[in-house]
Length: 249
Image 1 (cartoon, helix red, strand yellow):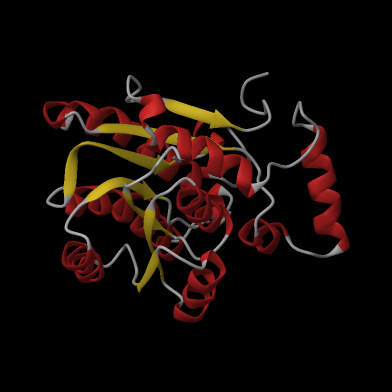
Image 2 (tube, one colour):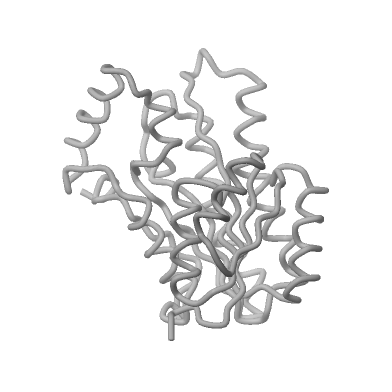
């Protein structure tokens, strides 16, 4: 019996990185998983990689019609949800003098609007006692350069975990935030760059992490699984840092 045996879960942004690793871990622990993502090709590949007990639904969390279609399919196929991991998000950098309206909108539409309405539109199919996990980040607790908009978006997500917890306490639905540190994902590699300069940045970043290395998606996935499972039945409203100590020490 796995930690999530018999549970129905949704992972947005489940086509790569932390989302894909979490979807795999959920299935390993006995759940049936729906994954969503914007890129159809990557999503189909992810579903094939997961192998069983998975349904992929293409869509953009910043588009409410796509969310409606996603939850309609979940209701049709399974009738309920026990776990939502609102993981879909993007990261873009820009110093204060470089921030444009386009950059702001692109980040907030997915990281804030997308997370908020994923949780809201899940409510009709969420079982009482369900678990919602929101994908925040250590950047909400750090004053990193060129991170103003991205960090603010993740601070909003952290706040959602608190306010949603109180809004949903009557149904015993737990809401928590997971805050990864720098994690070795395709998105991180693309953001930092695969050039020699990029590799030097990763080395410099690793030295700032007390454990001396980047995190692995599987490590974040296991922490999300804990929050999704009944093992965390008395935990709600928290921010769980999985960051090698970067924001703690």
